[in-house]
Figure 1 (tube, rainbow, N blue to C red):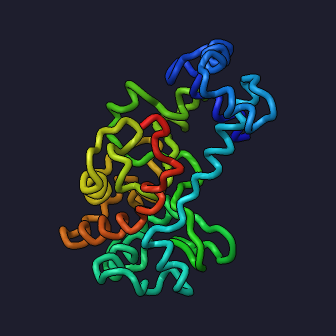
Figure 2 (cartoon, rainbow, N blue to C red; figure 1 turned 30 degrees about the horizontal axis):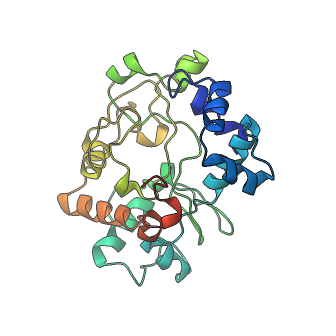
Length: 256
């Protein structure tokens, strides 16, 4: 559950490495938390259960739905149609992303787009229907060089299984313009760097995702995008930025 998950980074040695009982004592000693806990739970007592409930509810409130993409999607019957509020370049980038652009080996959607609500998943061609979630469904290897495995093997470090080495979950692409640096180790600094990677820098790996591997000899599949196609793809990714969400005062730093 989300309530369980929010307490894990606090205690994980690789993250905050804190003692949960000490966290409870620390919050109990901060005066301004007393009325907040009283307002939420009816009494000022701080417990790990109440901390997890409060944090989980806050996270559930953080729903991004007002990006340029969302506005276009709401007014269009299919993701494959041009969006009325997109520029020509943004619509071109959308087609590259979902794998429907002429003469372009794009189809980023095959790993980064899944369906929600009504609609049918398209076979190898991105997504059919009206709704989309910009998050991969499972850990994958995206063709970074093998040097990365020396420091972090992703899922493989947890399972010890060779077939899991170098597999990582991909986060949501919503607001991706604002979440640099990229990849699991932050090695790519800009969206342009990411597009360059998938365009012509995908490296061979025993567990390279099938959609990034070439047919036959298993060599990496490169998109070989032109400079104009790269710009279009980046323009589309920027339509996923929800400016209303990132400026919402409910999610601002409460200590400023």
